[in-house]
Image (tube, rainbow, N blue to C red; front, top):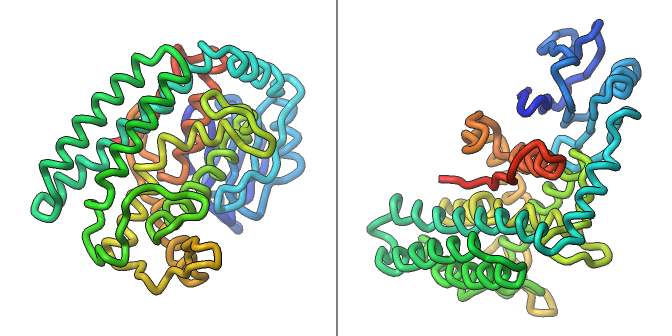
Length: 343
């Protein structure tokens, strides 16, 4: 369990939520493992399978406390919210921002600043941890170039300028990504991003991981009452969760890319975990997906200190915390959206 931003996160999978007076009680079997006053809470996120008592759900609705249910893996399932705190005002403001290119750029700018900053620090971590196994000069040059693109993103006055800075930064970052692969260089050779379909094992892993993380971001946005289909940088398209694609930008390098590199460099995955389809696309085998999912779930449980909140939390809650911060910015509770910037 973790309380952040007046939101209670219940991550014990077999916990059951019930009501005792004006308190939410978290039960595990016959044991009471937590008790929190409802008047201190704005929302409760439950990640599990046992659920909550009808009386408790009614109390949340009556008090205007948003109660969101997710699967243990983070998939959004359902939500209980009271009459006095529906999300119509939040979503109306989201749509207003999306219809205003200048305001959209103000939000999207921070997504991209976070993305470029985090990409740069993935490279800096490699320089720090493996100085004898990487080309220090080329990585230093790429890091400096990414720093300049972060400045360009910060100074961008339009979405077109912002997309230009983001695209240039991505080309720079992936131009040296192959150097971060320290084992089986031939089997995991990488010469740049290829998406539909991925043409090599690394691209297969990146695309698979980005898809999983985007789904997590969509669930997080649903949980706070935002529309995951209405984005600020990614344009609206039928069936595309554009805001989830905006939010996921901050987590691509620090979560997905680092996990992909760990799975390869720690020899958890090998060439035998991939197969090539009739279209020439490379995909994980069933066994490979199992290995990657296991590593993913383990990574989600690792803790970090959030740079804006200065609180410890597991990596798996990060999309939910950032979605909360985004919702607070849209409601006017924050002067700006604080992107996740990792070191």
